[in-house]
Image 1 (cartoon, rainbow, N blue to C red):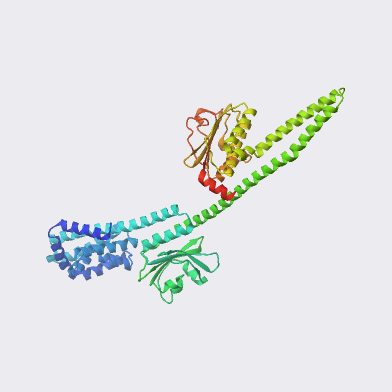
Image 2: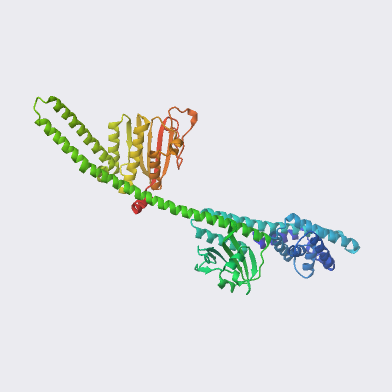
Length: 564
């Protein structure tokens, strides 16, 4: 609520207390006005004994019954006094005085006033006492409102700083929003954030209010740096102008608040607020700015680390992309060499063995039998090499697409393993070729793990494209395993390879497995990266393993096409 609205509410409350209140208030002011200077001098002595400084004493004296009498007797209105109370109340809040301490000080003033009134019988009447009581009520309400406004402004500033810290996507964006929030809090006319650029003497203004001014590098002398290592509030003149990091600003304003960023005792930067008039900070304002500077610097360090980490992750992802391309290229090279060199050589060997076998006399039965065995072994080796060539670089994937390649992969699995496989694929799978290769490798690795370890009698594979995501789900009713332990093993290359390929495409992987020997109370296995629901499925309620993969199709296509 605005200050004017609070004043109006208080004035309405004052008017409603008594129809005669305004008249009684002026009579009270006329009665007390001759006593104000004497009472104020005594009150100041009491405040000195309590340890209050000059600013606190001035604010407390202004909101007493004597302060009200001085203003109203001088022709001012009640609204004017209540506005003064709120202004002084906000200053007292910023000076670090608690509401209870203010009320206690006002009580001490009332005791001094009562003692003086008892000496003057003509002033000790019930009307005066009732008017003072009503005025005291309004003062307390106004003070509570003022303290609430200050605390609300502080809380709002810290909340906004926290929100910016969470929502900002870059260091410069975060610093710009930070200085914008603190400029509103301080009511400054302009402000800037300066950070070293890595050079021993030059700093860069990385955030500025009002916006629009270009960033630039400024040279800061070592002596100036040492002076800026402490918070400073100074009037800008010839002697203090060098403390303004940007000398141009020193000529435009009268006051500067300088708050350092410090880490491990060293100066890491500074934020400066400029005012068009003489304006000293108050203790709570300084405390909040120091706390905000600490939070700002920690957030800046965090943002910088996150940016560095993001850069490193991008480098790792690009390297991983390159390694995938290198791996596929190497697979194709090996498959070509197997086909062109080893495969053709073995075909020649088989042909030569067959020719030798036909040229042998009928009497060489033993030799013919051995040649037949060697030819059969060679034929088997040729078939194995063809299988390896197909696994290394499936031509059908290049020629007919992912769906056909997966059907071929499942067909081979069925021929080599007794497990029954159910395959569910969408009618159309429209993916970039390089993405198809990675998806094919994921399914290939999953089926290799099933063949090696699961002892499954049934395997189900679903693939679908929904809402911009390619969803792949594979489950088997095998022996299951401890997912946490499997991922923690360094030699567990199968699952780790799947996880890395999924991460490369910006997808999500969930693995759930329940060993056959586990009891029903063991609960679900570990979920990796994204916890998807498998309630009532294999890997949760029944022994076996379920692997679910989600890949963002649009971003995946852009990433892989641009990087691989």
